[in-house]
Length: 184
Image (tube, rainbow, N blue to C red; front, side, top):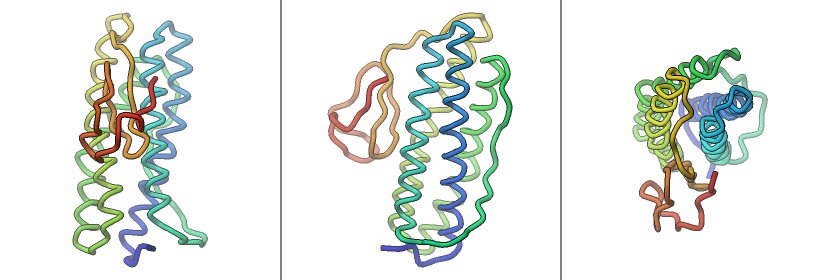
């Protein structure tokens, strides 16, 4: 079912653009962290990059057949610095999504009765909260010249839920089975 309201459709396109850029930015920063000798931070960037892809894919799918030429405006952090600085950019992006972008997009979609957009925005919002915290821990380690102490990272392929150490039997955000989690 296609999105009926232009504002929600614009927000989905904006979120798609932002998540797509985050996906690519985190892959680039992952390679930089690996070269700097932070393999666990590199793996975290790769894992969260996948979660951002999940979010972008969900937003794109909700637009369902909205074929057309649409400008997409999305903010993003640009540049390649040292890993601790790249993590600052990641934190800034995640906090923006948690505190400003997704709450606005979510409330608009609720007001406009766009159930699939509400679902997609909710999934992303819940994951971004976790991403911001994981990036803060990684930055603290990088600033001390150390790698992040983290085991495996698991990403739900349905909603992007992110967890370390062990995948749950059931995703606490979307209810997907443990088998939906991708391990990093």
